[in-house]
Image 1 (cartoon, rainbow, N blue to C red):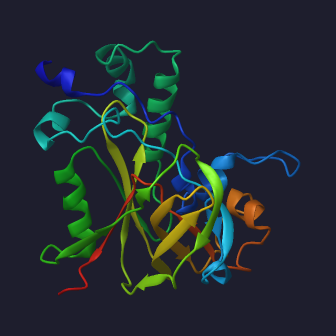
Image 2: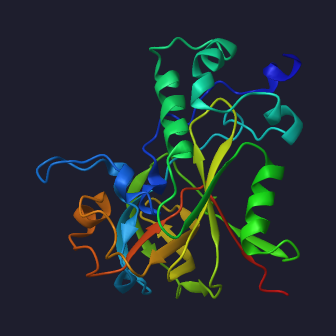
Length: 264
């Protein structure tokens, strides 16, 4: 098709789905207590860590936006089937073999998009900016002015895992409802967007890395975890039990968090 040349076939480095802490506990791969945790899981913390001067090891993936998949227009996205039942056709369309890492990544993306929502969760996989905004406005209100938050690199070195210090008092974004959209690996940009009922607190946090990196990070705290899967990796990272502590995590740089505008 004419627009195929606009699609980046470089997937998102087949990263772990860092967003799994957000309500997808039952989808997380289990690891044994003795197994070394992946460095990319250094994104979790608890509300007790939200204080000036707190130092914590954190992982922030480097993103090359020039090679990252881009959002298609609604017209382009709607012209390409987006279902697991069409996977064979799609692999041929994008020139991937069925045993390739890209094929596995696409299959995993369809799994996350097609699995039923959890209790209290509204979810949608957006394949265009228009469809993302449609879902966000359906949740937050069609006539609601929106703000969007993300994690931004102000200064970034090639180091992905290092100690970061909280520079200022974290700023809480006082909105009871939010929609978080997380990137999924696919030949073009696909966002897993969802809203989970319950108490969640959104923060903007200024971080200074030991290598001089500066990050304005978006982070969320899930205040009630008693219904989460006991095998959720966040509990192993934080050494807490379900319901015993809120679980917080930083958002990767290419994730989006939508809230009603504070300037309304």
